[in-house]
Image 1 (cartoon, rainbow, N blue to C red):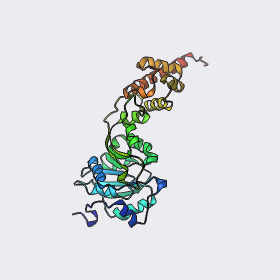
Image 2: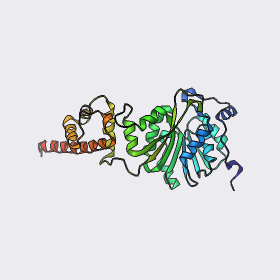
Image 3: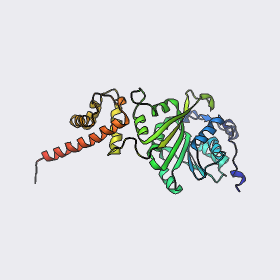
Image 4: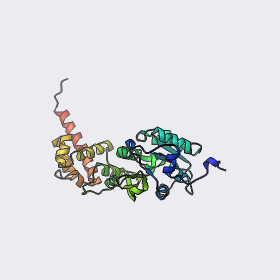
Length: 304
């Protein structure tokens, strides 16, 4: 039988929790606390954590989403609440520290070791959280790059950011973020969250996204590091044609050979390419660069 401290309870209103601890939202930290209990419950349902699952909550804050996860019909076995604000850490320990299912960690979520936790847990973890605006991109890449260590993530971000993640080729907002996330994961926008769901109210609309790892990359490549470099260099000057941006990075001759082999026209711009075309281009660049290196070595005089 669970102890009294571990019995599921509905999360308190964040305003009440703040008042109880004599705190206020910090503008310098970009803190906007989710007060809509319905959204808490929808995030909890979307996470679909089972009785043996371990959930990592990024930016656990006041612990209201943590409490919602614990109050689910089938709560997870364990929640690792990651937070770096000292005041919020104090709140989490006071509100939930007595519950053995909750582990509060004072860490920067960008550097959280998902792989180590997955190994210790014997299974991939589930990630939830309201990602801080200033580090949303870094956090999302940390989650995606964790690979098999994260089974899925249900995260809240600014809607504009979510739209960039799921953007399709040819749109103005399609970019490096779109390609790299879609290559490694299946991303879906689940629902929007209005400013009125937060305290204090932000000036932007938010959205909850589902990020589920793919069993293998969408478009297989020979060199994953090179693929990432090609995508990054292509979008670093997105207004330039690919033959110019990749010519600068790999050399005009290598780039020209790769365009011919991959059947991707060098006159196109990066936002026009599908993930598969980027993969073909990266593989062709690998072959062309290796051939150019071999030719250089053959041309060098034998000084022995």
